[in-house]
Image 1 (cartoon, helix red, strand yellow):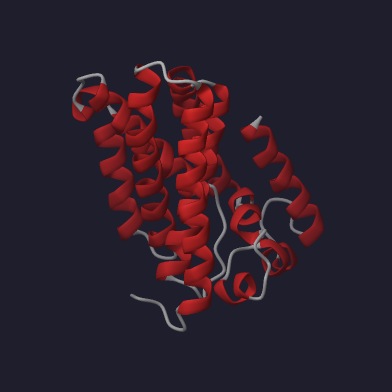
Image 2: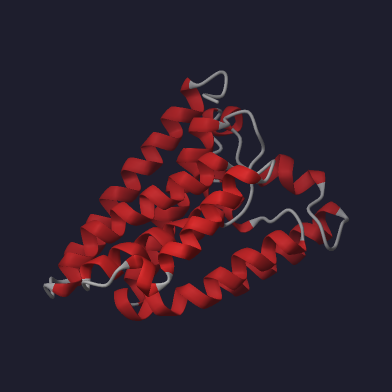
Length: 212
């Protein structure tokens, strides 16, 4: 479903912007993440920006990661709790992007994808498995290297999503293993999500210039 939503948004944004395989200026101006717009009350950009992708390669990489790692995490967490993790990671990515690059237009599901990386690492640690032997360590290391090595990548968005996903995994996976009720697990995710939501709104209205 998430992949379908991202694909649909890619097609719709291309049609709207007049650039079928790329992201035209109109969807960026109207829906992408940027601090001054969020500060003016356009809170929806924290979410809509995560369903826009600047080109086919950008979309393909994020959807490939979602296709590979998403089903594994969904089996570990359960469907509703996986959606909760994805949402919190998305908000964490928006918070990180606004904290580091508030004046930039930012798009992409990378914050949510990095959140999955972080949660997967926490799940492997909780099961007593090395993240390096389990495979998520090398994947995360390569992606962090690319985050800093390739220009125009949202460093804050990637790191914010990673932190949000890792925190959500660390907080909720023990509850799942202890067979706590769903409401308690979802409430924990919601609380973490509210913190990142509030942080994103705060960052949007606080920073005039980027930190870096």
